[in-house]
Amino acid sequence: MLIWFCLSKFRLILLLVLLSGLNGAPALALPSSLRVKLFEAHGRLESVHIRGPFDIVVPGQKRISKTEWIRVSSRNGQIELFSSGNSHHSFLSCQKLVVQPLDRRGVRIRINRDTIERAYLGRLNFSVGDTAKLPSLKIVNELPTFEYVASVVGSESPVRSPPEAMKALAVLVIAIVEQKGERSLVGDSTKEQAYKGCEHATPSVFAAVKAVYGKRLFYKNSPVQAFFHSTCAGGTSRGVDIFGKNAGPLVYLESVPCEYCKDSPFWDLKVSSLPLSTMNQAFGGRLSATKYDAQDRPTEVKILDGKSAGKVMSGYEAWLRIGRTYGWGKVPGTRYQFRDNNEKLVDIESSGAGHGVGYCQWGGVGMAEQGKTYEEILRFYFPKCNLRTIALRAPR
Ligand SMILES: [Zn+2]
Image 1 (cartoon, rainbow, N blue to C red):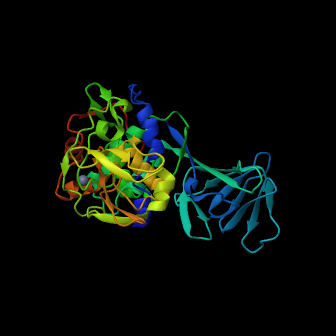
Image 2: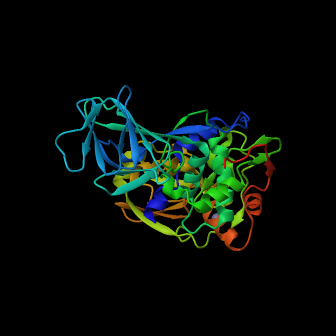
Image 3: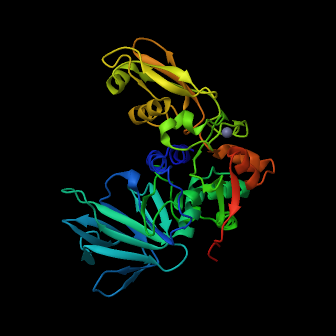
C-alpha cells in the first residue's frame, strides 16, 4: 500500500511541464515509441541482475543469447557482464549494449539487493552513467507507446480498479503521453507517471486502454491537459485555486463534491507531528494557513514569525515544500490545517492524497463499482469537458 501511495500521489515535474504548456493547444498525435529512464527514483545503480531469455547485442560483436540470471556491473568506465556462477571474471566488457527479450515475459531486472524485480519489453539500452567518479549504470527502455500506456495505467491504478475506472484513467494517461514527441525520454517514477514494467500491463489493462485509445477530453475545441490524483476525500478543487491564476487557462478544472473515494486509505483525517526546528529551517518560521478554497484546501500560507515573518506563499507551494522537507507521507493531501502542539512540535491534519484537482482515482473506482461507465466518470470529474473520438486505433 505504501508503495502504491508513493507511486501514485505527486507528480511535480509532470505538473510543472503541464502548467508551463497550458497556453498552447497540443497537437493530437501520439508518438509511436517512448524511451523510459528506469529506476530514476532509486539513486545510483552500480550493478543489476537480469534474466532472460534475451539477446545481448553489442555493436560490432556477435549476438549472445542468455536465459539464466547474469550480473551487469559498471566498473572503470565499462559495463561488465558476469555469469551467475562466476563473480570474478566477466564474459563481456563494453561501453554500451542492448538487451532484447525473446518472448512476452520480458527481461527481468533486479536491483537493490533483490528488493525490486520488474520485467520489461522492448529494448533495454545499457550505458555507463553520467556520474563522474562513481561507477553507475544507465538503463533506458525503448518501447511502443501502446505498451507504455498500458503499463502506466496498470502501475498507477488502485489495486482493485474495475475496467471502467481503468478506462477513465487511460484517457488521461494518453492525453499526457500525447504531449510528448517521438521517442521522448521520460522517467519511470511519479515525477511524471509511474511505469513499473510489463507485468502491470495485464490483459484487462490492455483491453481498457484499447477501448479508449482514440478517446480525448475536450474543453470547447481544445484537447485538455490531464490532471489526476489519488483521493480527494470529499471534493476536488478548482485548478486555478490550487495552481494559481497564472498557471494557464484551467477553467475546465472545476470543483466537484466526491464521496465515491470513501474506501480509499486516504479518506480519513491524518495527523502528523512535525518538528518545529526543521520547519524553521525550511521556511524561516512557523506557518499558518490564511486563506482557503471552497473545499477547505489552503490557498495562502503565511510565515508567522522568525526571519521570514510575513512572507506568503500558495497553499500548494507550502504543501510541496512540506513534502520535500518531511517526506510525502506526512501530509498526503492538499487539504491540510496547522495545529499548534507545543514549542517543539507542530501538528498538521490532512485528508486525501495528491493535489486534489481533476480526476480522483479512488473516486473513479467507487463510481465504477456502482456501475458507472468511464464516460460518466469523466463527465462527473470534468463537467465542463466533452469526450470525443479521434481517428486513431489501438494497435492489435
Ligand atoms: Zn474523491
